[in-house]
Image (cartoon, rainbow, N blue to C red; front, top):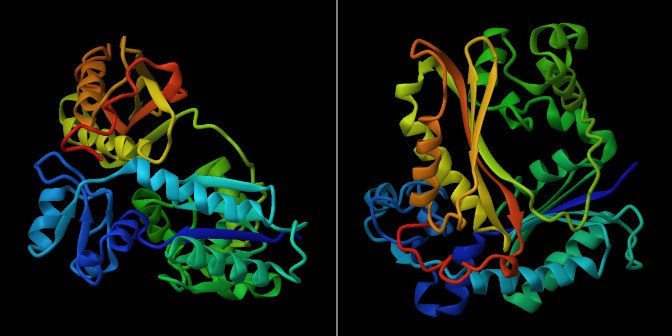
Length: 358
């Protein structure tokens, strides 16, 4: 039985800004540039009360919270704090898998410290983060990765929640199926059509029936509903690709997917701010009504330097899709791949100087 901790910094970017500028404490802070094309990188808990969320268009955030203080992101500073946090985590185990600048998994089945339990380690980690960075973190402790991630969100901000092995099924039973990893709006709708609204209801469905309806993912659904997640904590995995995709509620022609491409490209660009590596190849993925997958990619002479450049290339790739105009698509995705270290590209300077991007 493994012992997994998921550590998640609370409103990380915004909290760093509030820590470093006392005038921002207690005020609704939005980390983003103002502008029609800018997206929110982070929002303080004061701003979240107004409905402001990360990846939201900055213009909408300003409408929701007119008194918000907009702060331009400083990724170099956030990365420096993230390295501080990483050093704290590595005191307790070498098995640390960063997911982004502000969250990571730890496998403490065989810890480096002499603390008696995973819960004790999680408490110590949170104490050390508070003492050494003056920031707060929430943590979840569980026997599986996806459970630990759910648990870390359970008592946010500045909380700790533990799911013990014998508590797994009782904990999962009342949760909506949307809390299961990989269940988005479309899958949630399909499960709702079957009358499956909670994880407990999903667990009672025979795995063969789920496989018949959803293929291999049906088995994965059944395993997660039973609290089974065989994913291991894998440390030091350099970013190779970042992508985002979505399935349409109804199949769409190629001419009708521009808005979705723009939204997904902005989401991917926002995600790239979490890594120091730079993606050089832009990828457009399409899945047709009959489940054929089409991909188009381009590696420009210089990596995209802004969300606008990424969007422009993704839309250009749409023009290279050679399919009848009557073809309908059920899914679209945008990605960046072929990541390299910043030192390996001649254009790393200015990556964080563009206005309107996060």
